[in-house]
Image (cartoon, one colour):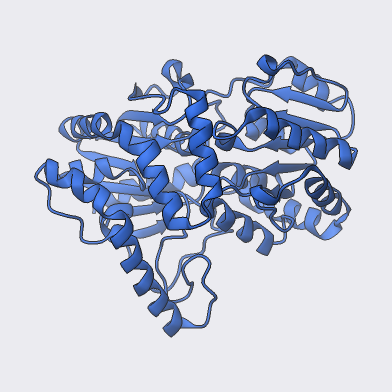
Length: 423
């Protein structure tokens, strides 16, 4: 079958879809993947062993580094989850919306099935217009309604209260966010979306939750089109490159270091201040550290026996050689740390990252989250030392890591998609 895939966002939103495209291509399908990256142009030269077609559209969405820092700072300072989402749509998606929709229409015209990032409403609208079956891939389960789990940030007071809370959450989401996909749909003669959750973020044809079953268990009241497939990842580099020789040497020259990365949030912050925060934490904790910071050389920084800087590195290869990860709580980084069997110290920047941080803390593999606005070198250092001293957290991480490492998210997703096609 000819299958078109489209994603938008940062590296954590792109890597899962590269993995899925590779899996579907290897299974005999003819796959085209369209990428729109918010903050980097490094995917233009991406090549993969599986041989699917790749198109890069409107990338980077925000090419001005200072503007990106300003947008990121505004999003981090806004603590209301709905307003954070509106800012992300208005500042990071709308500038590329028209070009992404044209790419969505092209995918629908050329392919028999389309698969898209749940947040990218252009593909769902185009699929509806062209009558193409559409699969949504969800990277976090915070917006999947259930009487057995309340909306994020709401206490669990039982099934009745949870139903009421979700009814209110739907109303708020529709009022605040549905206008964006509806405006696009109106311009292209597509009926308004019925509901933000059910008709924009999810697809009643098939919605894959690309989350480890260790974190996300299926709820009894979910419709059948919701399927937990596990994290979508690959053992190939996806624009991260290989492990540099200097990094390999640092990793093997002493005790396992702490890996520090704020992922895409590095692009949306004052990088000098962020690096100083992480390096200061490593110094106060008296640990060796690898700090991932694109462009660190331009800041005049130098590696030492205690701190080694990298622009990027494949987490699947490096994390298992580290003692813990200090990170922002992105879906990809959180699950990479889980798979590696090492503890996390999480500094969430957004509401979705706070959700991941609470999940990992609840599972006993992470320290209590430190919100970005309250993060200091001393607080992060204290968390690193407490994690290192906690045999319980380290053992939980090892045990869970062994379990997560056995999961085969891409294989499961390919099988589920194939079963749905055949049905």
